[in-house]
Image (tube, rainbow, N blue to C red; front, side, top):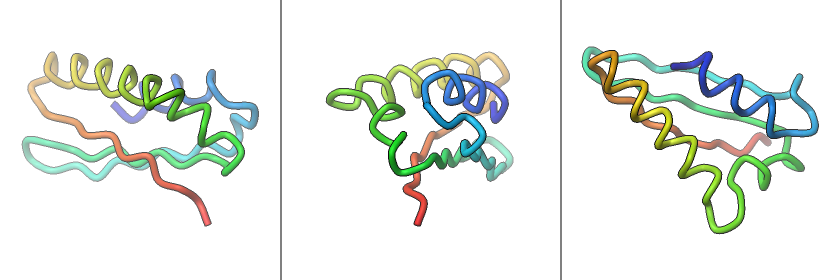
Length: 78
């Protein structure tokens, strides 16, 4: 799941080398944390959150196929 989110995010942003994805895995679920440069944050979230929602939908479909639940958190870097 981590690789899926990372590859999608790298195509969306202007600074793909600044994309950082971490996965906190549990037994039945995992949390995917996506960090980008501040200037690219809007591109990952999209207008009215549409891009983020689309990424979450793809992640949900892929994780269901594996038998786990995955949640995406978009974290602002400091």
